[in-house]
Length: 139
Image 1 (cartoon, helix red, strand yellow):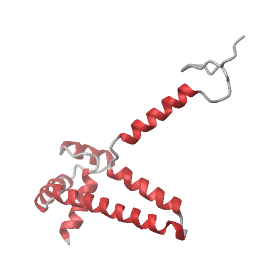
Image 2: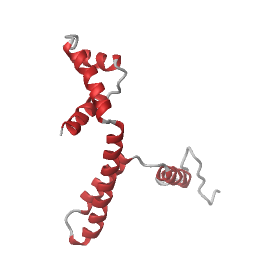
Image 3: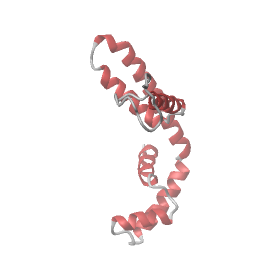
Image 4: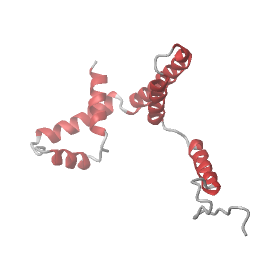
């Protein structure tokens, strides 16, 4: 007669819904994921979610202010990097290249836009970044 329940990584002999082997693995994987560096966009999402969870309770005011400050710092870092990458000269060059493609008449459909973007060697976000950079340098 077996007096102790046996567990392994595949079958839960106790069939009670809890498997300590899987629980330990899940805890280990969660710890490994928490140790990974979080990119800034993900952190902004996390901050937004935390602020939403706090709601408008007065108890969360201090935490909410700290989260808003952190989000502002992250946004400032992103804007600084963007400005360094998209200088006025680079923006002018890329805008001229794009306008040349458009004025040639070869862009008529969304597929043509994608093909022109690839021909110029741009990533999928470069057109949106170009529009943003033009707005920044136009002012």
